[in-house]
Image (cartoon, rainbow over all chains, first blue to last red; front, side, top):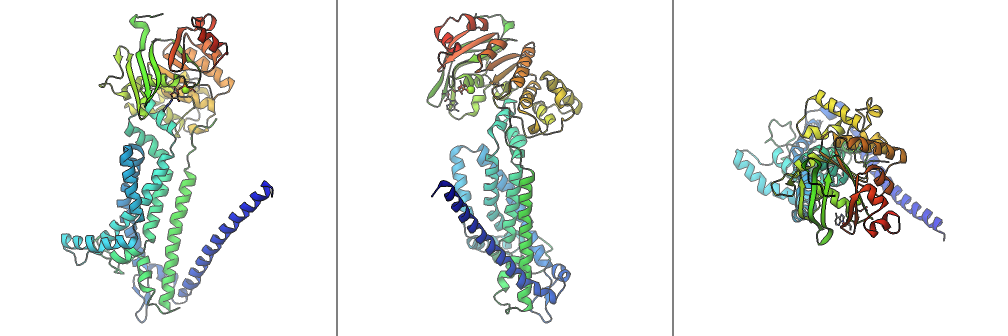
Length: 295
Length: 257
Ligand SMILES: Nc1ncnc2c1ncn2[C@@H]1O[C@H](COP(=O)(O)OP(=O)(O)OP(=O)(O)O)[C@@H](O)[C@H]1O
Ligand SMILES: [Mg+2]
């Protein structure tokens, strides 16, 4: 066999495997839409998305998922408020500031965090954070937006931190040297050269971290409280979309309105995470900085 | 050739040894660089030219495990004194690297990066400074209409002149150049050599080069290094016509190295 033939074979093997995964992904999407779309024979798209009442088991049922969408967005936003500074700053610290031993320790901790099963984090939220919140703030329940946001933030930090760290490492050393040679301090170099040069990667990291939070199911199922209503305070319970799907799918009769509504909710969730990923892609393409000097 | 008149003296090393960890890269370097002169550092690859250059503005501080012994006196003050702030040293001793390394920012922001750090914030001051530095680096005519464009879109030779302008915008006393033309075509090289000739009226220039003709053309004094030692330091003309040391002659005539 010539080398050329070998290369063709290898190329085709890769091609077939990628086709298979694309095909499977396609099947899942088709299935999602096939099971979700029939809902719209019963309710309009508008009433579904913006409807304020999620009473899928009443008669007549009401399939408005606006409270679920709001629940998802709110825990995602609040968890980002916690996770973005933590994740980005820890990445900066690890890649630029920490002494080597500290670097190793921190990286190990973050990897450990990334490896924690979400159900374990959910337990932590239920058993430690919830009672604490309940007592400290004198609440009816500690399973609420704050609790879910904290736990989701813990889950998003490793994603944000490790992707940001890669982006920071990728900043060419020449830029740093040029900055130091012009009399910049370490912090000026970090703030004015390194972070701007890594910004597209950092943005991608943030968006992927948020996508992770919005799609996360187990945590919100366990600690968000489950109330399908528009929250009025950060201590209110919410019912993010994934929690609703996971909690109700077992009880929804096959191909009932409720069943279709849950799939339709899945479509919304899918489109949202897809949007997050597309934005991340777009940013990393558009702002890809021309590496080092070209000659 | 020792010259101890204060007005010709600007920076000198005294019995300097330099280590990368356990590896001794420079041995007992004592060298006096004269003001408003061009000094060339030559020698085979790995002999320690860049190490010496980077030692003069404390750029080697950035390398973990690097260590200096001896003194580097800049206007009479040892820059390795614990009280000295390396940032302050680097503001007064600028550096141009072998590979052009503009920031991925606009041409204007590249030039004004240093001055802004030192607190120049006024827009018209910055514009005047940018124009002046770009003119000094003979780049103004080529870029005056595209100051907002990314520096990455310039050619290699233009990028290198931009880096020189960026260093000049700090109004340094000394300009260190590490093989500034090694990545450039002959035309850009000629431009930068002319530029160096012009700059030496105002600045003290220390330049590392592998190009013997270049050293001969542009420098007043030349130091020849071999495996971390300063073998000969003399007027350029002498080095290239009648060196004191046989090794220097062998290197210059291409018999080794
Ligand atoms: N960061 C470093 N860590 C360890 N050793 C180094 C480092 N930089 C340089 N050296 C070593 O120090 C010696 C001198 O290196 P230096 O870069 O000063 O040489 P040079 O004369 O500039 O060579 P060239 O002409 O190839 O640029 C070499 O043996 C090199 O391997
Ligand atoms: Mg070198």
